[in-house]
Length: 282
Length: 282
Image (tube, each protein chain N blue to C red):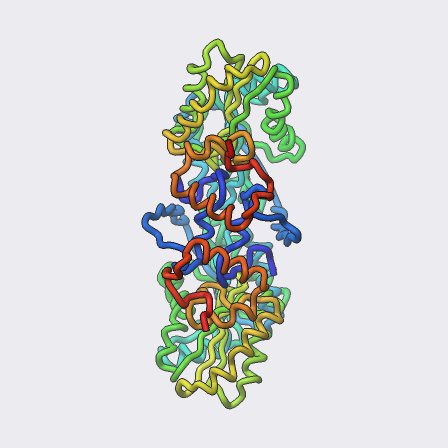
């Protein structure tokens, strides 16, 4: 049977283990279901002036592209500066405060290109975007994706970089980057943001000359508190692990933490499964 | 935040409660995320001669319709007999051993109709289907869906009906209906099958003159055993509840049942949450 086949015979144990970071047990066998590769993929790379227009364009993409919309990635000017300075990669459409990479995946190329072209025309007409390009050629498609994908590679060349991985409601998504830029002032070399806008997932990065414990204490727990106040998650993809364990009681409802501890204690009474992770023991 | 926003801060407690049938706790607050209504919906209603061709047609629909494929429902001849006899509903395309209802949902009507028409033409050319109709008009769309949706309504008029809700690998999906028809012989008035083929979800129904304990014992646990042997699930949607609790140890791995009992005992040590459900206590 496929890995996600419909089955309602009792508790969904698989989901209890997903995201438990090895603290409840270990995986000895896996069934992987592979989706079919889409027939065609295209993208639009767009330049925008304000975050409000990023949101308008995203909303328009949901309407115009709907079932073929497969990724919406945002890159801010500072992230583009980072890849230009360190990797000599350049925006193919000139300089803008924000960039959006909108990808489509579907089964009929002419239909998808028609939808994508109309979407970009509409955004230009309505003034949501200042410029952009539609890319249908596979090698150019890869080139543009590599701008987005290589932002993390530059970390090693930017002194020390504090990397955060948040989920935020879209109205607060970029607000946090603005706020942190102000909050950091001269303490940071650069504060930049990029990520999976379609998932509400922001990678917020703060680069400094070198690692400094005082800077960590200045950033944390302040930043996690702000994410909580903005009704977000302090870990969208990367988990709690070791470094964020002490903030768990701060960001989660006490009854949820209590239930988690209860589950941990009942499945691993001796605390031998991936110790020190998720729960703080000091 | 949306109900399914990305959050990896600890155990996914929501998933532990989904499908637990009230045996671990109760829900006091819910966030519901509503997807946007699709701009357009169309369907094809197809007539087929063999289950092998049902599978070929389903496979073709995944390729041709891909991202706009929103439902694939199968109805067998006997299910169509039931709605004709009791509700005077008729197949709009004549009589066939199997029917498929293939629904599309998308953002651009002309694209979707183009894809759907090509799909039906291809299936006719390849001999996967014997006949069919493409429906784009909303009132006709509803009429055809109502044939499928009214099959359960006829239960009250068919004497007593034993209703099953299985997930089966597609190669075994209809095999079980054939088998049960033979197995039941004169004991049943009718054995019929319909359901969400796209999910591997089969509603297998056995109608008899009136409820009889001996017939239940003849059907069960035999039918659950066959589903297990065919690598399926004895409950695709409806849960374990009260009636299937005693079969849980038969169909599930002992370590999974043990872990479920352990979770139950640790979250509900007094056994007061929806007792007698899922776990058998005799």
